Image 1 (cartoon, one colour):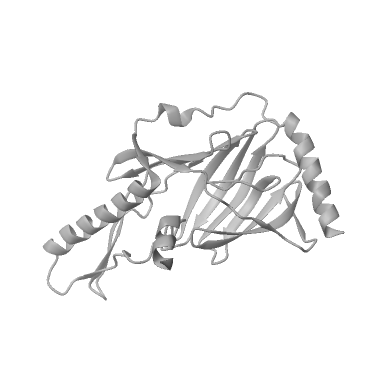
Image 2 (cartoon, helix red, strand yellow):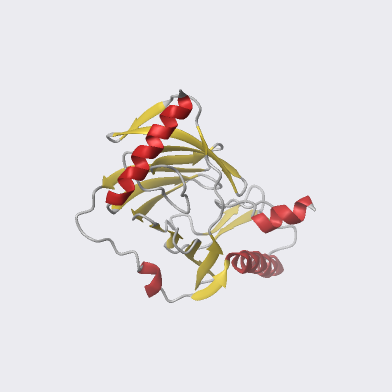
Length: 257
């Protein structure tokens, strides 16, 4: 019976795909990986493409010192970041920066192996009835609530692959929590999905970008420690990432060898 119900949902979604219209969703992102930060995320979705923009929040950027422990914590200034999921060309393109230098980061479309809830649990978000799904992706476990009544397979950030729009998603440690705050659907005008084409950024692969981040972190820590008084400690966070993605596929493969 549950399989039959799922088949009905999928049939509803796929039959509606021929009439899919653009949708714009605003999310509130609560990030509490180190310091609690709230951010605004705007995602534009079409039939085969999504574009998410996360607005920077630099309220806690800079160097914080703790006189009690004689330690410092460095939080670099952020820029607005973008992620575009392209199901036609099977790729994800993102805009991010390192040391005030913008990069256009390309990666093959990653596999997101969703597990739909076997229970009939539903949740009302805004005016939409949502179903539950689970995902393990790059070191985090997620719970998502999606609605098949908006037939686009996207959500915030890089998320894709569910039979309906994601309205809420969070990891099980609640370090990252996206919640919808506004939905414009159907969109009355054409949305601009070409923002990334207008960005002045250097092309780079995801793997090279991640390696460059680690390299620059080591350089920064070495420079700071060089000028600090003897006995100073610094919370570097070099061994444990706190970003959305904790472990990448090539790292997991290397570790398992």
